[in-house]
Each structure stands twice: as structure tokens, then as C-alpha cells.
Image (cartoon, rainbow, N blue to C red; front, side, top):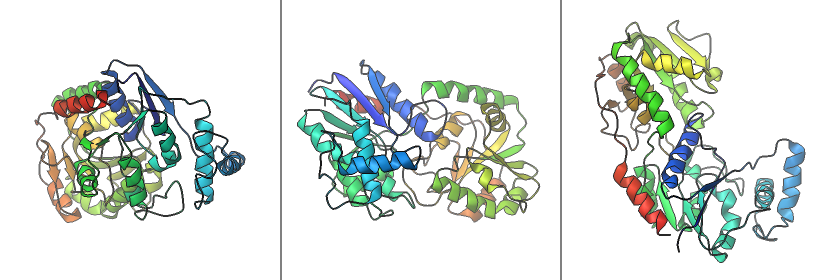
Length: 370
């Protein structure tokens, strides 16, 4: 098949701002644009704005009235969430049409799109999946077509990926896991898109003459694994402040207001959601950034961004997955070692990460041959 049309459907918008999912999609969009074809992007919303719209979608899930989501496709899965998402999918695909020459690109909430896959294949279109993570391995995540919690629906999510004509992972660990399940995939790590790299380079330049007075913890608390890791660091706030040796520890990011509490030491501040200027100034003055996570999938987009900005990073192995051996990154086994590493002066003259040029070339080679 010759690729004639690229359609990207995602619950994530592609943007150089926002959370890591937005910037990963921006990276994918920039890469797909090299194929020389226009990209049709649909930002899909499955959850209704209110109870009434959710109920409407549940009813439509029973009688989808859509060639993409046929009547009876959810037989045996009559959970309200499954019906709501099937109804939402029917609405989202009401005016959607594909045929030979079309490549549909999916990246997230994959199980919700599963009812449409047989029809995609019947119409001669191809499917490329670039998962931002394995949702079924995200602690507490619920199956979009049922009520099961992670990781009990891993096999169902893998079945969606197995149906892809092309599959490309964001982490080596997920590539390994899928290979063990007999699902081959490509690997393309996160690398900041062009619009993000320019700002990170400016921070790197500004850091050459800046006083290093802060230790930063940055992330989106709306992401449960990130929130759990931040809570672990807050539990050790006094030890971190002591090891910071006069630097103020600043925790910031969307939704982090929930972590503010009076028991924190004076030099440990939770800034909550901050403007781009506040974040930039914090990174310019950062002695080091801390990343700590418990088990989850995907890969932390903020680590390569911090390293591009010239900010050294201390991370545990889970947070550092797929980024081990990068210049500027210190990997520690546990919180005790993280505190000890914080006492040591960090190297600030390391080179920024290089773009994964060979992996990008292979991605496009395979994609254009679909």
C-alpha cells in the first residue's frame, strides 16, 4: 500500500506546552510531517461533560447506530463504562471514513478504539500504534471496556497492539515486554520537539552564569505514578532539605497544590501550577532536579528535557527507565541513596542528549512502507 493519508486520533492534543503526553504527540506529528503528507488530527473526548451526556452515550452504546461500532459488538461486556465509551466512539466516528491508502495512528486509550478495528481492516486502511505507555500497567488504571483494574487487563490491551500493522514503543522496557509476548515493535524514545528544544537551549545558555540556589522537583500530579513518587519525596522532605546544603527545594507542576501541607520544612516549598516564566527561572537556578517513581509504564519525558536544559538529574531506576547512561543523569537505587547523591556536587558541563536520528529514520522507513 502507498500511504496517501495520515489520520491521527488521540485523547491527547499535540502541543509544545502542557504535559508530557502533549509534547510526545508533538514529537510524533513533527516526525510524520517528514513523510510529506498532511496530517488530519482528531482530539477525541470519551468522558461526557456532564451526567446527561454520559447517559446519552451509554444508550448509544447499546444501539450505537454506527457502521464503526456495530450492534452487539459489546455482547458480554455490558458494563456502563464500556457502553459509555462505545457510545462515545460511535459519536466520534459518525463522519469518519477511511479506505486503502489511509494510515490511522493511535497512541492512547487504545482499548476504547478496539470495536472499530475490524472495520478499519475491512476497509483496507492500515493501523499504526505509538503507545505513550501501557495503560494496563499504570497503577489503578481501569479498562475502558470494563471495570477491571490494572494489571488484570494487560492481555486485552496487548491484543489491540497485536492488531497493528506498525507498533512503536516509547521505552525499551515496553518493547522488551511486548517481544516476550510475541508482539514485535519499534522503539522511538521521547526527544523534545523543535518548539520545545529552543527554549531548553536558552535555559542551558542562561545557566552558564547563574547562581545555583534551588533543587527542583517537576511533574504533573494529575498523573498518578508521578503523584505517588512526589509523595515519597515529601515523606523525606527534611532529609532532602538537609542534603540540599542551603538550596531551597521547590516542587512544582500542574496539580501539585494537593501536596502542600504545614508540616513541611521552611526550605521545602510546594509551588503548585506555575507559569512558564517561573518554571524557566527555577531551571536556570537549579543545582539539580530529582525524579522518583514507583512501578509504571511509558517513559518520563521530563528527564531528556531537563538534560537538554543542562539541569543534572538524580533519579531512581524506575524513573530513569530507558535513559540509563545518559550524561548528566545519576541513577540511585532508593531514597537513601538519592539523599546521599544530593549531598554531592553535580556536574553541570555535560553535553545535551542527541536526537535519535537512526531510530527516527527507521520509524519513517517502516511507516512509509505500510
